[in-house]
Every structure is written in structure tokens, then in C-alpha cells.
Amino acid sequence: MQLSTNYGLKLPEGTDNVKRQDFIDNFSKIDSVMKEHDTHLSDMVYQTAGGSATVITITIKGSLVNGYPITFIASSNNGGAATTINGKKLYKPGTTTSPNLTAGKAYTVWYNSAGDNGNGCFFIKASAEGDAIAANVLAGKKFSNDNDTGLVGTLDLSSLVSGNIKSGITINGVSGNASVVDTADATVLASQMISGTTAYKSGTKITGTMPFVTGDANAHYPANQLSAGAYSGDGVNYAYMGVPNGNYLNNIAWIKSAQPDLLAQNIVTGKSIFGLNGNATRSTYTTGVCTKNVAVELGFRPKLVIVDGNLLQVYSEYDSSLNMGFYKYTGSGSGSSNNFISISDTGFTSTGAGGKFICC
Image (cartoon, rainbow, N blue to C red; front, side):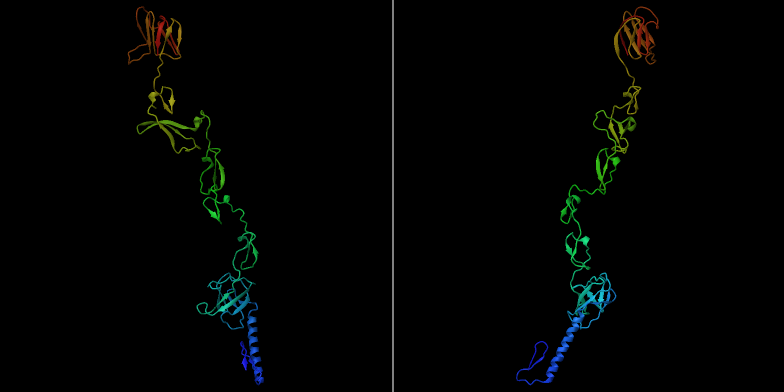
């Protein structure tokens, strides 16, 4: 009598005596195998897991051997935290990382007796996983995550162009444009920029307000906007000018120029240059011909007059160092100090005689 290959059922041959027990034995093996098959099938029905989100309990009817599959529906979210099934750790395939379980989702796991250092563990069946959402995936592209499959992305990258990226930066293969500059660290103020000029600060365009005179060779700042003067330092005379408030140097420094001849004695009395008052006496030299008793207009009061006619007349202001009086007469003739030259604030009159004159 032969036996079947898979379950060892008795197969009578033509010459064998068939016994009732042979049939009983065959049906007993078939019943046992079918029961075992049903048991495996029952473990593949999705039952709702008990326990907690990370300490899961399920009913296992079969024997845990390598590759034995079990299915269940998660009752809670485990948030990716370490999880066990009936005391055995649950990992992603080939790792020691716990999968992310979502309440209401069905899962298939299989047993590995050598996993978890020989203590045995469950590995979850490889499937879609991840926490990406539609806004994270390029518009029009399909993806799957822990929650579902066949999802469609909504991420719009139409603005990802060179003109929107600063120079030296590349994003997703798009290089920045040289015209895009990071202005976040700029410190310029509108009051520090010449009126009408522009700049960018923290991404915002600003226009200068600082006054500035240009284009006219005769243009100048009013005197009340400037600080100017003369001073001596290190043995050198300087002329200086302070820049008005709101302009380039904002009175932080002075513009100066060495001027050795900028001295009081080089400036006539009554005049001031760069704040330096002059003390030099101005002398005016004039010559001409005068007529007796006719006033000569000079435009100034002379200090010395000499008339050379038929008699020599000399007038000078009193100067004790020169021992000179108000009137001095030389030559023939006679007269008094009141008769020959009369001085006024604008000239003189010769009362003694006419002739050539020189005065200063």
C-alpha cells in the first residue's frame, strides 16, 4: 500500500485488502489538517486589538513559528512609540524601530523567533508609511502616508525662480540671481543719504532726505548753516569749515586747509576772513593835479598830502614817532597852517596854490 506525498494518506492498491481502519486513519488526518488550516485562516481575520496604544493584545490561535502572519485593527494611535504585541516587540521590517500605528487602520504582522536578540519579535508587513501631507508634495503628484494611499500633492513651486533667490544660494536646482541681495543687515537711514538717492534696507526701498546743493557753480550753503574759522596748530595756520548737520560728515569732522598767510596782519582793519579780524592798515596812493581852492575828491581821508606848485605844501596827521605835526611848510611865500591844505573825510582842498599832488 502506498502513502500520499503531503499528508501520508493510505492509498490501497488493487491487490491490497482494504480495511476499515485505513479509511478512519485517512479521515482523521484530513480532519486534523483542515482544522489547522482553519486556525491559520482565523488568525488572518482582522480583529480589533486590545490593550493600549503601545501594549497591544490580540488573540493568536495558531502556533508562533517563523513567518506566522497575524492581522489586527489598531484601536489607538501609538505615535511611533515603542510597542509590543502580546509581550513581543513590534518593529519595522529589518529594523529595531517601532512603526507608526493609527487608530482604525488594519495591519498585518509576522513573527520572527530569532528577532529581538532571540526573544522573538513581530515585524510589520511593509506598507505605505510617512507623515507627509498634501501641502508637502509637489502639486499633481501622488503619494501615500500612514493615513492613506493615492493622495495628491498641492505644493506650488511656481515662485521658485532665480529672481526670488539671493545670489550664491541654490534651491532645488535653481540658482539665485545676482540682483537679489540680502539687505537685512543694512543700517543706512534716509537722513544719511543725499536727497533723491535710493537704497534698500531689510527688503524695503528708502529714499534719501539729506539736503545737497549741486549743478550750480555759485551754489552755496547759507552762512547760518556752516561753521568756519581759522586756528593755529602744530605751528601751522589753518582755515577750517564744519559740514552742516544732515550732510556728509554730520559735524563729526572738519574740512581744513593749511594757510600759512592767514594772519591778522595780512587782513586790513575792519575785515574778517574765516573769523580772523584784520589789523593791517590800508594805504591808498593817489597822484594828480589840483587847483587852488578847488576840492579834490579822493573817496577817503588822506593822511599825507604833498602839493608841488609855486610853493611846496605838505600836510600829515600827527605822528609823535615821526615828530610830524599837522602842517609843515617849505619854500618861499608865507602863510599859516590854516591857509594851505584843508583835509576832509573824502579828500582835500589846496588853499595856498595849485599844482601836482601826491597823497595817501
